[in-house]
Length: 60
Image (cartoon, rainbow, N blue to C red; front, side, top):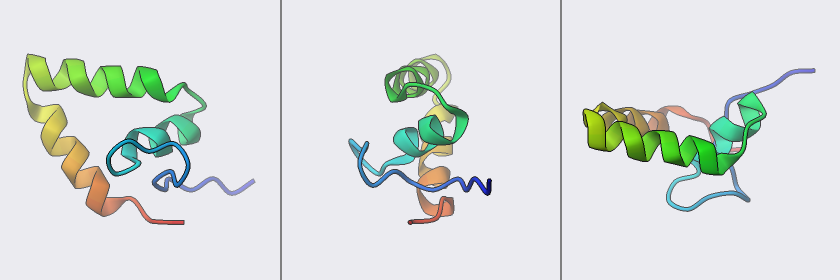
């Protein structure tokens, strides 16, 4: 099985990053989104990570 980290085409709210991460790691996308929201409020680095991942993750 060849897993690739790609943005989600079906589970996307903004860019599909959280949905893609959730599919890759076998998690619920709501938990990934919540982690990014908490990270954004605690330090703000989650916003930068999200933007980087939005450009770095491949499309299907």
